[in-house]
Image (cartoon, rainbow, N blue to C red):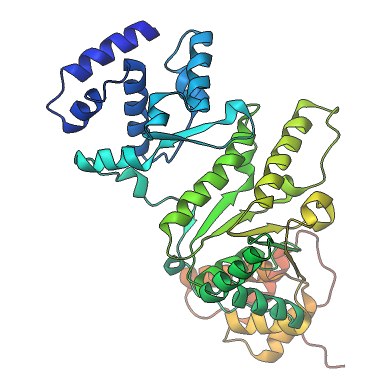
Amino acid sequence: MNTLELFYDSENIISNNHQYPLIKKIDQLKYSIADKYLLIYLIWKTIIGNESTDLGRALEGIYDNSSTRLNYMQKLISGQNPLVKDQFIELENAQFFNDTEIKLAPKAKELLHNSGVKLFGASKKKENILYPKDTPLRNLVYNEEELKQLNMLQKLIDDKQLKATQARLKTKGLPIGVTVLLHGSPGTGKTETVKQLAKQTKREIMKIDMSATKSMWFGESQKIVKRIFTDYKALAKTCKRTPILLFNEADALISKRMDVSSSNTSQTENAIQNILLEELENFEGILMATTNLADNLDTAFERRFLFKLRFQKPSVSNKAQIWQQNLAHLSFEECEVLAKRFDFSGGQIENIVRKAEIHEILHGGITTFKEIVEFCTSELLVESKIQIGFNNK
């Protein structure tokens, strides 16, 4: 239906349903049907779990005339609209005109509460939020330098210490956000380290899959990045302690910027990075990013990360310790042989452990050293010519 039909039918529905307290109270506000419709629309979006809504997209579904739509949008953004003036809705700050997000203000949520409407959707558990109680406790193995840096970081994000640190930084006029880059070879425990830090300090993690920012629609990626930080701020308000924002495998987002003249894709990716740089500049929470390609890090991001933790492949002694922790039935001598013969990361060793567990479930009994060696050999994509077994020399 066109805009005229939409408003005509909506006005009839509202006026004929005063038996519902919320509808009656909205009608009593004496707003235009356009404003009533937008308010009800935002209420519905909030009830189904959307903290905020893209303004441009919402208005496209209401107005079939572009000039009317633009005029209405301008009044909202400038604060001239009654819904904004009366503090029923509020707009999120945006870098671009068409990136504006709109959401219910506390006054509107109070109206819902007083009308008996509960926001179950808004408190629904989200799939990308990791809770401390859901993370299994793991004893990770680090080298001396890694352990030193991680102990310092754990002390910093201890709740009492973090608040004191941020308060002091604020009095000095310095940025108060804690931003950490964890970099190193794949499988060295970067992501698991973040999870364990969160568990030890009893913090939620908002985990972001960076591939999700690569939207197929031009211009959507920038909005998604802005939305990430908006959602993080909303989550922080509901948490007892400041949550951790985790950018997992952030290589694509923080890599060196490309020549903008090369393609529209390059322009979009550079615009995304500019938004991220701006958000990091004003960030006040805890952000941790993991990457396997630190050498390709754009120089503009170097100073945005306060701490840079490098994870190296485990040494032979560390690998032997990892083998022993996970396969306790092997002797330490056998674990040393595996550590020397196979240059595996912690993640690759974990794969072997999983294979051993599956083998024991399927065949019964405990996996032998010989079977573990066979699993290790099959883990290698390139055939190894190294000797397997004990060397008495």
